[in-house]
Image 1 (cartoon, rainbow, N blue to C red):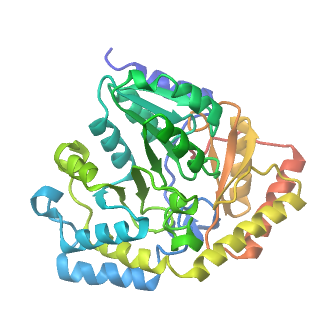
Image 2 (image 1 turned 120 degrees about the vertical axis):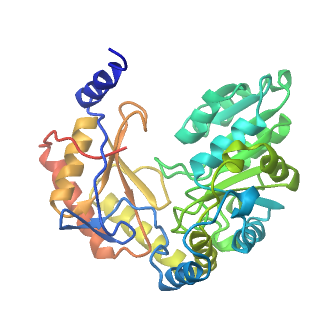
Length: 397
């Protein structure tokens, strides 16, 4: 029987507490969401600055729909690159201090497109071990040699780069803010090592763009915050900016090369004009310091309260605040019990994170109220103290 492995692998996924499924929700861009008519406080969204439903952002999208329709009309090299797209690219260059920018439908497409286009057989790709799946998948599919260094371990990175002169080109890749742990890449030290070994540095700042660098350029990102300029910067609009899509920012030659040779760009429909218009407005609003102040306040409330409750905090000062549980079944059970108390928290399990590090990944928004954060943590502390976890399958990553 053809493809019999499909059912076998699904069964195995259930058995190892790794089964995934979607859950239909309404209001996922808000602090409150609904599932099957039940209300939950949302601690799993990525709308860090509360921009996704801002009235000015919605108005920008609405105006663009009336003037231009819903879609973009084609791929960027045919009819899809509008004046809105051009304006957004220029806005990104100004904000990130890069020469040129190019838009993609998603961060996954951007990462995959860059690595598949730039690297060939005889090249070396060096990645932080905890980099996003899109980067790892791109590396495994590339003809280049891929090596990984221990997370933020500069000695290991230096050893990994020791023989890089045996390769034609070397690209070092790190995240700015790591999506599952919430900590930052040591970008300054990584940039120093890359330069020392004549390598290029690429930074995936999906979870830092729009937030980090607030005091050095109002959300320009983790690179500017740490005082570096990577050769290639990737960031998305679906997190702090609250819309959708992604970009690559680099020098003119890199963007020109991608425009001509990146299949993910050439053969994809351009971002819808209303999304681009909303993104332009959202980036403008992300300059408002009060949004950053409120998010930082909520992060402080979370960490201070968690410490008082003796919860096992991770070393994260970002909007991503994971609590490591370890066992996948226990993590699922705790997430389910939190849902029963009205808190939408996602259980993250292997292979998204290493075996033995299943976690509750809680994300904070500028729109959260302190009372909601405190209530969540008190509920979690009570559940953990009870030590009675019921094994129930749930949606997770």
